[in-house]
Amino acid sequence: MADKKEEDLDLDVKGGGKSNTVLLIALIVLLLLVGGGGAAFFLLSGDDSSAESDAGAATEHKEEKVEAKETHYLKLGKEFVVNLEDTSKVNFMQVEIQVMARETEPLDLIEQNMPMIRNKLMLILSSQKYEQVNTLEGKEKLREEIKQAIQEILHEESPKANIEAVYFTSLIMQ
Image 1 (cartoon, rainbow, N blue to C red):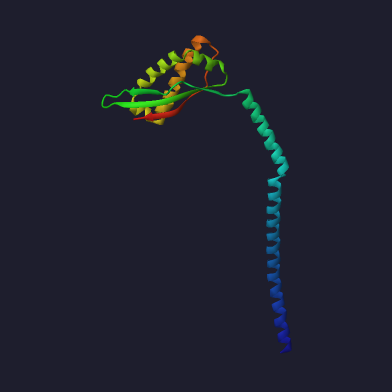
Image 2 (cartoon, rainbow, N blue to C red; image 1 turned 180 degrees about the horizontal axis):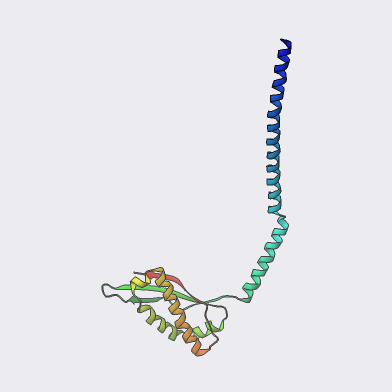
């Protein structure tokens, strides 16, 4: 009987050895995963001081571009109030417009020719239909049409004078 107990004990120890091996392999895999994750974290996070210096260099580079292409804005006088073309009912539009240019020359020319430009814009705005201007595409098309009209007047004065964009800073339709 004592022999039998020793055999049972031997079997239990051998069985426990297999579970220890599995446990050992699982711990090794876990350590590799944790170690790999930690290494990836440190490699990807990098040194904060070098990131800050890179960000500083990028900011300086952007500032140089901004200085080279400074933007200038000009409000085209008081807001425009026009009747929109519509046969069924009366509709109004009130719009405030600003122009952007990279140089001051076109804006100076706009100020010199403000009555002519405002007249042209009043004609363009009053010829719009409510249904067209009420959509985003209609507003974008109107902005482009206004920009082209201003460009035409500017090019009569100076072929090099260009505006970059026209913005509606206020737009009310009723």
